[in-house]
Amino acid sequence: MSDSEERGLVGVKDVEAVAAEEMDRNAVARVDMEHNRFPYAIVWGPLCPITCCFPCVGHMGIGDSKGRIHDFNGPYSIGVDHFMVGEVWRYFVVSGPEDRGWDAAIARADREYEGRMHNICCDNCHHHTALALTEGGRPHGLLSACLLVATKGKCTCW
Image (cartoon, rainbow, N blue to C red; front, side, top):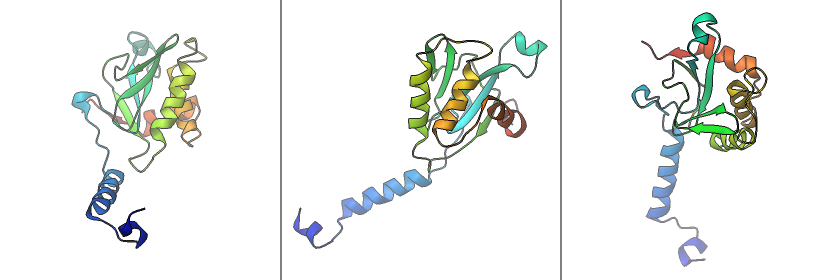
């Protein structure tokens, strides 16, 4: 322990580090549609041509703290920063930079689903997103995650 630390003195570097950490914590996570970045958000896109016949059917993913989308896009496959259906059509911001466990929750869901077979009806991208939310302390099932995006989500079209 240094003499300064022993006396309880705080150096300039310590103050700068605390200020930078505080700025990071209070920074606003910005959605960047041009670059397909949706931090702390659930995202949805259409599965053409199925969505044309059944408008409620689509593909879902979840954005990490940097806005990269994670989605269960096939058997034993998690896409990161490459949304399976291309561009996001709807999104709902769930949290913000103050949520320190967000990325860890998504990583746990990714690890779980990269070991699973994709089943279009019973174990799919919606289930992966719901697990990430639940792992992060927001218990959401498949239906509630879908309803959040459908009823409270924003459209990227306008």
